[in-house]
Length: 216
Image (cartoon, rainbow, N blue to C red; front, side, top):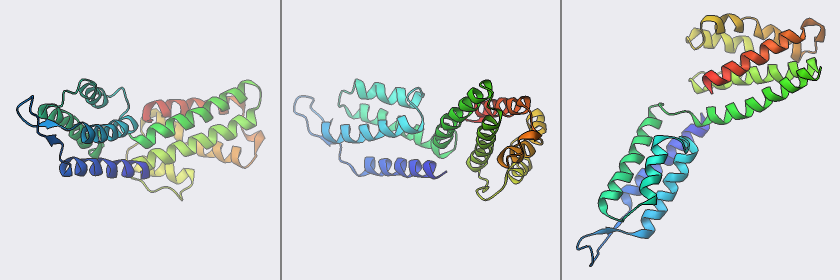
């Protein structure tokens, strides 16, 4: 949530900058005001950086803004179009309709841990794989809860699962599978190696992989 708040702050800063900047300059050849090169490039570069970080370069917001930037002709209408696209991204971000920055980063990091857990399991290191998979699961659940407005920073895994259920964020087969995960997590984290089998670890890994695909 902290990174989302920082991104929102930057959206507001760039909107304020747009309103306070005098982009237009007189033009003898055009016969009317034109957009000045320096203020346009400064503001647009900042916007492109923010869009890349928050919505991704494959998003319509980034692609449309980048297209205007590439073919910018310095007419006021070009500036208005660019500003409209920026406002659309800002509006969607404020409304929570864009993929969360924190979720994207979390998914990549946790995915690396899951890949390492799978490698350890295939090499016969069941116990190491269990610790990695369990840690990834707990972190994924906490991050998912946090993104959805739940304060679970000091909660144990059972409490996190209960909070997610109470808000209706997990259901169906996923909900049933989650009931068994805290116990397996406790076995792994407290070195009760004889309490679980390789297939139990594989089950945790599979659950985390699907959870990341669905939510991150």
